[in-house]
Length: 287
Length: 287
Image 1 (cartoon, rainbow over the protein chains, first blue to last red):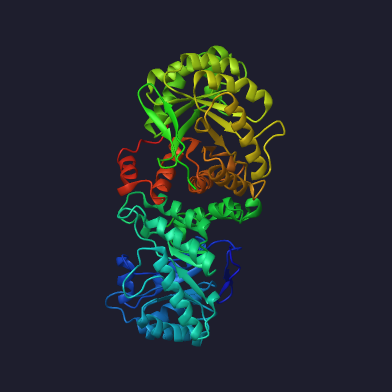
Image 2 (image 1 turned 60 degrees about the horizontal axis):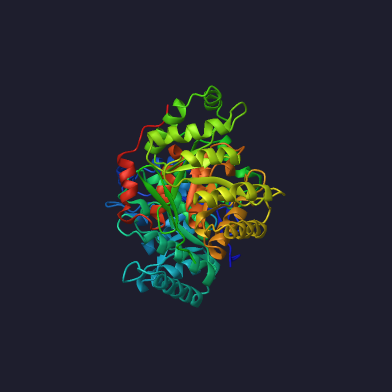
């Protein structure tokens, strides 16, 4: 059964409710120096103008939430992450996703972030659970739970569900509600394992049926190493939404329209109002 | 359960097996004068050079089967359909889908068509069943069964299933095997009914679960009246393949890549061989 669990995010001016009955939420992924040399260089230089421009552009392109990750070699995350979060909150009204594995940087960012941000992320490793969940409880914010643990990413849906149950149990012991945990079911690349996406889709369906939580995914790993990746990512996101995914960490420039089209086909966009509105105001592609 | 029912089509040199375990079959839709003034004018003039070029181009673009429809005002289908079918068979080796509601034209085309073509189509109306199924039985060919009857297209999946059962029963009484009926579950436009696609997807799942036959769909009705239709059609085809659709009547120029991407994500393309092969030999867009 589709659940009615709701995860509430609040930004400076607007809020977003991740829920199965609502349109699919897009968390803009582009403020992340991994594989982006220019952003990494700007961050190392302490220049956050680029971060602000990326935040604004992603909102124009349809991002509902902005993910902020400043982890790069040579960057002092503890100093820079709160600065970047504040900079993003200065220029956009939407909720922020604070993306770090460093609990000290996380707390520094939580202290200055307006509204009710999403924490990205905790996983099933004991070290991660012990470091991240107390902050999630203290600041009463929702968190993404990655379905992996000390042994890496489990190969089967059943083992990923076990990690989900472990995270839920630890969260519960700290007073964190299941509705405040959004599970990332983890997508591996189909070029190395032709069943990779099927296992992820099966994991989504089981999280929805057995736990009822919201589900998030990064959409681009699935096509790693293949040509014309956008088409593969779109097909995967479409199938993931049908399976019960309620938010995607994506580049809105490429993924907004496939997400809107899928919501439309799945009956989540009466009279095609959101699709048509987007089409009418469609921004120009990035330079 | 996914069935193992197989529908075998044979062309002049190559054969195609529609089956759930196989890649999704693309039936090229472009030889159809509906809404295509130039093709209609060529057909009225009895000129089939254009038909030949469209057949060749669709095969280059990835069509596995070529649909041939010459029904237009001013065209003598009984004379022209067999001529067009022969012309297509001259220039391409793949199986042909003979697309007409006129039983006299159908028989004339069946007499000259090489291999084992697909008949497109019969529906649940008594007049259609009586006119088309005896020819299907006599020529031992497979047929598309449209899930509509004298009252039009049923609004619910349950009523569409009733039409399917009626067609199966009539076919059986003439010795036609269920594997030789491919059901078209009919896609209506989402702009006028936000549940239109959901009903079609539900019908596909029920045909697969309760009858086990192969399922075909036209992919483009779903987006009628909306902008940027390709994205909507792609999302719908992806969901339909996941629901159990095994063939699509589409424009291969636009639909080959989404179909290959979906087959890849659904584990039907080990090592991404088909996807990569297509990408390497990708044809130029039509003029």
